[in-house]
Length: 182
Image (tube, rainbow, N blue to C red; front, side, top):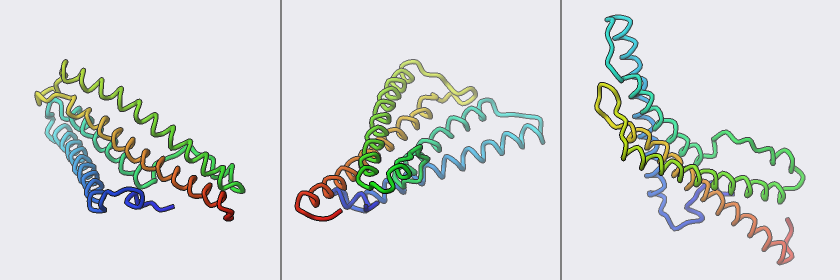
């Protein structure tokens, strides 16, 4: 099974690489911001006895972008944590294992889509009733938008997995119908 989504789609490799680079950039920049913000909080508090109102909250909220955009990235890379025992249970039955992976990917896709819908409603509500980061006069909804973006990315990548799994299963079934071997 190819891990290259371009093998199943007409999307050029540069578009895929571009999307992944954007995710890497967002994750890297937000992680750097969180790290530097927390370092600044510690230095100001313990060396100078001062603080910047809302900086810890802002760092935590920016961390949401790090976490969820990163979750989208590892979903693409297939390095995310999975509670999938099908590989162990169906070692001697690869087709059944492929069916189990297909079912797991459909479930993951469905859960991400449902969670995306809930998150969309929350984001709309957040823009209607904004909560501001103390000291920065910044609407927290922009920061919480990272949850929605991450779920959209994960939904997209799980959809690619569903299509890839279906392609694998159909190709195998077509080979079996034509008298091929497994």
